[in-house]
Each structure stands twice: as C-alpha cells, then as structure tokens.
Amino acid sequence: MSDHSFLSAWREQSLGRRLFLRVSAASAASVTLVAAGCSTSTPEPTAVDPYQLTLPAGDPGLLYYAYFLALTQAALYQKVTDTPPADLTAAERVIFADLRDHEVIYRETIKYVIDPTGATVLLPTDFAINLTSFTLTTRAGVLAAAQLLEDLTAAAYPTILPLFTSANIPQRTLLLKISSVQARHAATVRDLLTPGSFASSDVVENTGALAGQLRTKTPTEVMTAFAPYFAPYVITVANLAVPV
Image (cartoon, rainbow, N blue to C red; front, side):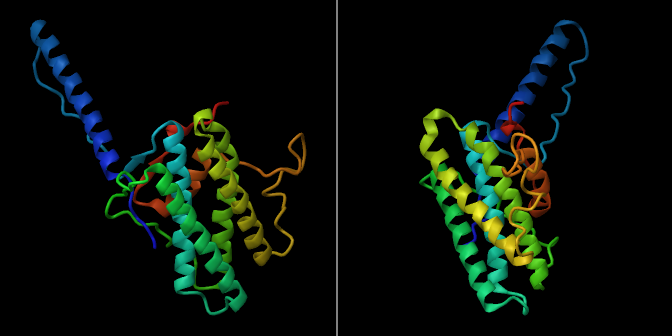
C-alpha cells in the first residue's frame, strides 16, 4: 500500500511559472539595454534544482507536511513488518503491524483531503523514502528508529494545528485526532524501548509555565531531522514559517 506519489503536476506548474518569470525579466532587461545603447545579450536563466520540493503556503502546505510525516512512518513500519528482526517478539510484531496500519490510514486519508481525485498528490516517479540511516535488523535498531520518528511527529502536530485557517476547521479537527494518536504511538514505542520513559525530560517540559507539556518543534526543525529520509530530494517548508 506504499504510495510514493506527490504533486508532479503542481511541481511542474510551479517550476514553469518561475522559469517564465525569470525569462520575462531577462527579456525586459534586454529591451532596456537596447534603448540605452548597451549590450543586448540575455543572461542565462538560473537552473532550477530538480530535487527541491517546496511545500505551498497556507492550509495546503500544512496538509502536505502532515502527509510527508505519515508517508515516512508508513514506509518504516511496512519495512519492519515485511522483514522483522529475529529478536522482535511476536507481541511486538503485532504492535508494529498496528502502527503500520494506522500510518497507512493517515497517509491515505490526508492524501484524500488534499485532493479526493488523487490527481495532484503525485511525487516524482523516482521518489522513495530512504531508510538506510536506520539499523532495522535488530530489535533495538527498530525501536530506536520508531522512537525517533514518533517523537518528531508528536512534536510537529501541536505547532501546525493553530496555523489552519478558521475556514478549514474540519481539516484541523482531523489532524487534531491524528495528533492524539501519534502521541500514544510515541508513548508506546518509548515504553517498549525503555519502560517508563514515555514522559521523559527530553520530550516533556520540566519547568516554567509549560511544565508537563509536550516539547514541540517547528516545521523547519522537523523537516531538518527528516531530511535524510527524503534524500536526494530536499523538501522546503519556508512557506510554513511559524509566526514568532
């Protein structure tokens, strides 16, 4: 059920507009130079990086952001359930199968919300989640990978939920429900790796007005941590900047 599709039409249109604007600007500059008696040579347009994917601003970008999180987690859990390490217990294999099912549902649900026709949620044909930085041949390696992704995802949702416009309350409500389950995923995985660590100081604030609450991360922080899993592609979230 893995879906490595994303937004090729949107990407091509976006890149096409950028290139058109660059060429148009260059042409206008050439006309000015001719009128002034200067050189009419047109500068070469700056090449567009084919491996850069820029998420759109606003609610669509927030949905794509959540989509990439689910896409990555689903890929990890699918890999684990397909080829589980020998020392992963039978009970733990059932848990990972449940985690896989949840993330596939989130991935497909968010994809549907972005576009019910599925026409615009298209990734480049060679896009694939890169899991080579993880050690998935041992129980410890699998749990460490799962904890990393779950902690990051749990920390991502509280930051983006308030950014949705009031017109998209249903979308925000959907992601709020997913956020709640993601926090439970993180707690479950942490407890498997280190019993009782689900509220450890590295994920929960210990002092100040936010003591006892989950530590959150901005889209830039989360996508920087996720970057190795998208290589060679680079996903830019500058349009999702959180107001200071």
